[in-house]
Length: 387
Image 1 (cartoon, one colour):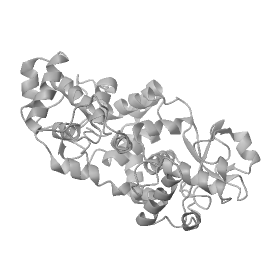
Image 2 (cartoon, one colour; image 1 turned 90 degrees about the vertical axis):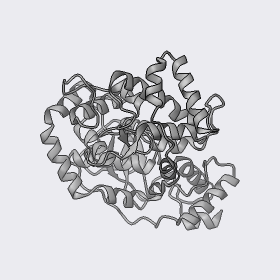
Image 3 (cartoon, one colour; image 1 turned 180 degrees about the vertical axis):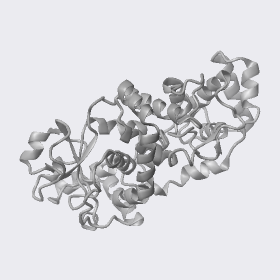
Image 4 (cartoon, rainbow, N blue to C red; image 1 turned 180 degrees about the horizontal axis):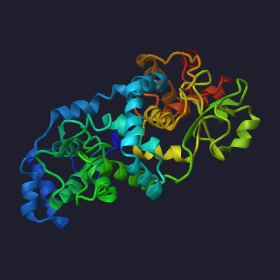
């Protein structure tokens, strides 16, 4: 799922002019083969690589059906963070203790962070996806929604094939082309793959050490800062300036403390951060430190990212968050109505899709502030009616 929501976000942008897509399938495959040879791949290996390629309509169906991202934080986090997953996480932390020590020593990524990704991406390797990876990548490259994301991955998969690390017929993974226990795209595997078990191969599907160290290396390459926190639950003062909440404002913990923000644990885990209210001022509250932003390089969904970061704190010993008493989430129809009204007022909310993404949150907060409402970025029927 490394780029699953990145793919979704890029759907809001017109395909790049240079990214050829569409047209007849056979001619499209011919174009890919010509480009591969032009890039220096031999005609023989190129022909063998593309020989079994087929368009997969199930990939396009999955791409168009991402309703899970309409769930709110409490609903989503409670669905995916189960006692079983926490117990398995703790068991895996012991089983692969030496691997996690190495991940932290070499890349500065704590065990809890890797365990959370491992759990949410593939349920610790149990569910890695059953889509033919080559077919998925070529299908999404041919589709004109965002070929600029997937076309380069086809050639990266060809490079892996030439290394003997990718089988066009049998390599399977997620519908968006990610492979292995922590779901990495071919370009990421080439850049960050680690042979942690020393068998001479980077085996992300079958080797937990390889997958975990590769994930750690990728997070470090994305900007993860060793020894730094990522997320921490806090209590917020009910009369604070809500317009300062959200990722758009970063203040020192001393500044937040002066506004009545208190850590649920004994002390703040960092020196500066942003206050996150995933479900508004009456719901859970967190302070997000700089490492939290690295999560968005892995995935673009606010709800997924906040859940993954929170799950990592749970696996690191933090208690269950206080859910509070937030106002209900808007229905899909009302969220779309709200997005249309926000768009009509000049806000960039992206596609009218009913998903409370970063653009919609920012627009909601701006309109709440303009109307004199609590600017906590959580959409409400009151805001919808006022607009």
